[in-house]
Length: 143
Image (cartoon, rainbow, N blue to C red; front, side, top):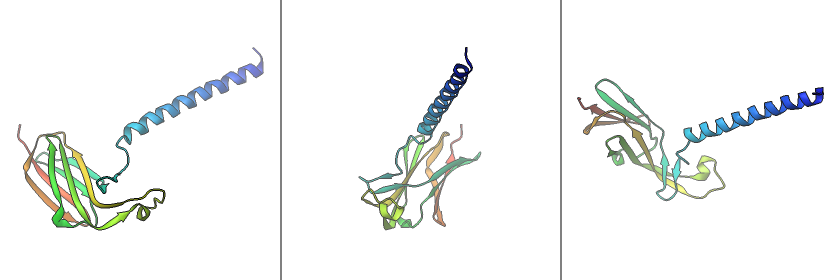
């Protein structure tokens, strides 16, 4: 085998590794961001950032919901493992306000869903709003 053929085969191997790495990154990104866009133009709703954490006695769901009308906050158990928080915003937000100029539309509410992997009591909840954060506390059901 000549020197030129050997170098070419090393580059072919490297290209194969790079392609394999790119495929793995694409799969990882697709699984991490499979939810799609963070807005729904049909319902005029933006997806709020949220977090779910559990203690031994309760489940706490927090949602980043700035500039909302606090009296419009609704918390509903979608099913036994999912909670949805919605609220109307004081001021509508347009795509242009978000720096997106190639789309048209405006949003008047915020929404988020949290998956809870333990049994919780949806009837007993405490809702608090401070500094743009909605915090919902549920008691955990005893086994």
